[in-house]
Image 1 (cartoon, rainbow, N blue to C red):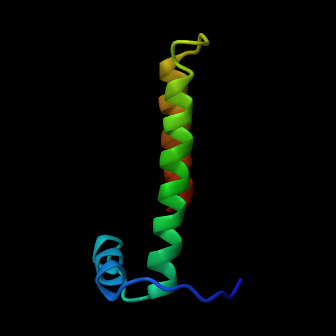
Image 2 (cartoon, rainbow, N blue to C red):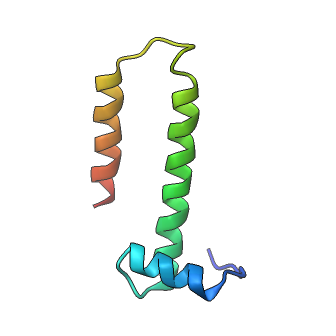
Image 3 (cartoon, rainbow, N blue to C red):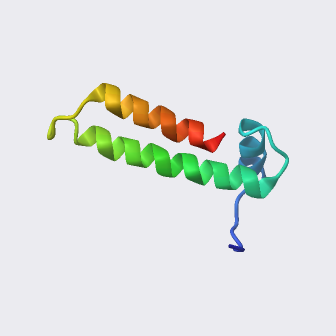
Length: 70
């Protein structure tokens, strides 16, 4: 989807460096995906004391998600 957003040049350059790309769209998309994933994991961790789950299974699923990107 095409959209117009205002992001400072320094933030764009940092994202391009972090994601090792000169493609601004790819750098921004990767940053947004990482932010989404981070917040999902943060919410999941808040549930840790409220529900019982297998931490090894969660780690395996997280690794699978990471590997799907590449």
